[in-house]
Amino acid sequence: MRLIAAHGAPVFVIGTPLSHTLSPLIHNVAFETAALPHRYFALQVQPDELSRFVDIIRQLDSPGANLTLPHKEKICSIISDRDPEVEQLGAANTIYNHAGKLRLANTDIYGFSRLLEPWLHKVRDSGVLVLGAGGAARACLVALQQLNCQQIFLWNRTPEKALKLAKELGGSSLQTLGDSALQSGQFAAAVVVNATSVGLQEPEPEIFPQKLIQPGMVGIDLIYNRSTKFLQNFQQCGAENSDGLAMLVYQAARSWQLWTGQKPPIKAMFKAINDRVKES
Ligand code: NAP
Image 1 (cartoon, rainbow, N blue to C red):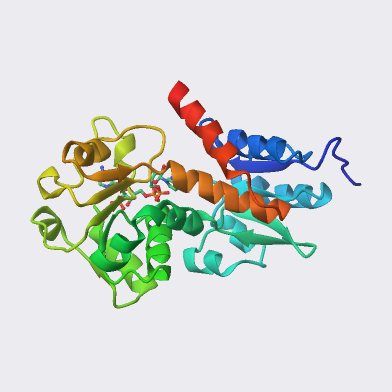
Image 2: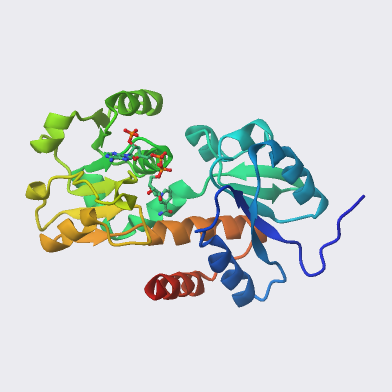
């Protein structure tokens, strides 16, 4: 049996739930702009269907797929060929075809590094505080280590998780902070990254004390589809700030490049997503 795709093999994002994903918009605009015949679809796949899904993309000769919750870790037990970032994060967000074999990648580290570009001097010289110890925080920490950030502080609501993550990642530049050290500003960081999901909660708890924000600081919230209180506090204090939209677009662009071997049409990808976010 061999499935034949009518127009260019399809590319998928799989997960559950998937109702809010912006990935089809970004990738379909990129395929159209580059005049490639592929189309990108969101597909609800349950954990017990993951192996079957991998068989199907092999049969379709698909360029690959994106993976979101709950498949990012489990896929590592199904596809053994993988990029070094997947080993570092223990999770993959991309399947692509590498010399005829399916291989795993994680493009979140790249996406976050690109988001940081306007502030690289501050990141390297003035220290960074990361709030959170989930999958997104882990990608941020690995990116910061790769960028040779001299001092990284890590705080998490559940301190045991921050300690475990710091131990796993290692390195003398990474130090965990307790609640009282955070609240009293006992850290030297000009860049604060909110890698928690608090901005999705109503009402949003104040995770980083506004009294600690100085005009020369930078606040980054990885959430991309709303103006969080965290970011508003930085704005009110005259400090630079960014949501996570650039990370979303750049991680998508990197996946797209792995699938097509072409330079991604990044401007068109940003325009599509900016237009959509403005509409909502
Ligand atoms: P996750 O693995 O579920 O981790 C959630 C984190 O948020 C944990 O550190 C958790 O702390 C913390 N948290 C949740 N509620 C909190 C509260 N009320 N107070 C303090 N801390 C709280 O999620 P994730 O995958 O890392 O994602 C985190 C955020 O990043 C999400 O909002 C996601 O949308 C965003 N994200 C954006 C991009 C992008 O491309 N821009 C990519 C990935 C993720 P505990 O450990 O104490 O529970």
